[in-house]
Image (cartoon, rainbow over all chains, first blue to last red; front, side):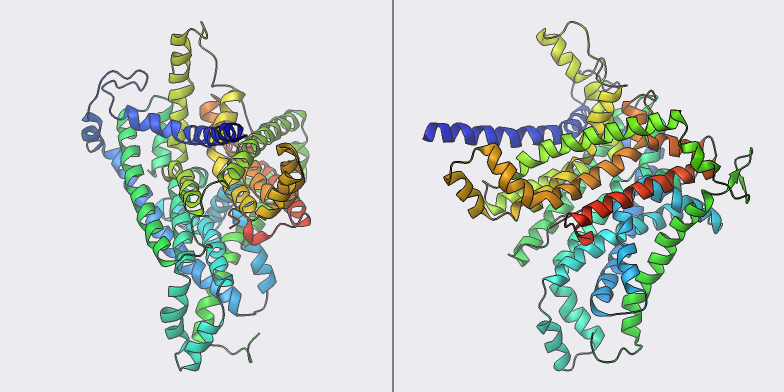
Length: 269
Length: 288
């Protein structure tokens, strides 16, 4: 009996390990080949750090990465602020058209990215907004806000109203209650919403593709332009650095979060 | 809700951005492509304000119907594969402590901290004729001629399943973790087989989570033109490629808009089903 149980446990763990191998294989290969002396990304010939040096000479690639990172950071900041405010507003207040707004706001999560991309592209053309980094930024804000709202909303829903009521009874104004009571309490929800929006922005290809316009240099557009002619390992080197940086950010915030709350409800969703 | 609604700066700041956002960045763009889909394209890449239903009629051209079927077929296979991986993964994860569960779920997200185009490139290194998988298989003597693992539908399915898998794992895991463990234990005590436990306990209780994940996988899979481009080698066109071409190369915006409206209607239809089986809008895409 116990041998059968051990075998069963082994099979289950093996399955979990296989899933992780599947998930990590492509990026594992990219990281490995960033240390490859060959330019071709085909055979591993020898170990080198040269591509990390090359990376800092490839101005186009660096520029693309800088733009992508900048868009990710700014869009995360703005969508986190708007998303948090909206989640609070939708929870607290009734206003004209609220039930329509509450339905509309989830549409970008579920609508095909390509449709959102071309809808934004068409609308930008309609209002004569020049396509470029700014239009990409607006678009990233547009698809991130709903994810922040969902995340903050679930934090708000688990919050007993007594905290706010107590603060207001004790004479704190609305803004004081917001900054000293409400926001600290729903911080895990805000942080996970922000992380999600940062990840989505870095990861995005489709929306950027349509809203960037010709001549704009962001990471997915750069890679798209070189993928057919062959990618040089400096892209692998960049990927490796990106992973290290973003994984560190994620680990630190996850650590901070798990220290602060023991109950579930936050976390990356 | 509260006392009398009165105008205040606070209230304005909490509600106005949401309203502005919904109107300007959701409603206007959707209405505008709806409007565009009834216009007539001219031969210069622009369009004239002659209202027509031709763009919708064109969708029913056999070529496009076939493409739509192929595209949906690929998306269905991808969704099914993602379910096939996510369910056992989520259920097996239940044996672990809550702490390791949290850690492993976060680990699922790590590869996604790069860019999906970069990860797709990782698959090229693995899948191509002289790629790692073929080299490994050749050197072990399992095959004597390299397999065609990409520049075909197979490559697209692998790439899409990979890229979209987390969007299935997260809602399925979240649904599975809410299933009462006593029910599972009771079913096992009463002699139910593993398959029966899954079919009678897990599946009915996690249906909306699974549908949530299926939506988040199926819908993007119809549109992910870049995976079809890169891993399909331009040989396999999905609806996403067709829409992209209408906007960027063929420059027939009205037809592209009609295709988009069509996709949007399909999305709303699927959402209706999702709500019917008890799914909630605010759980879409996550589901904690």
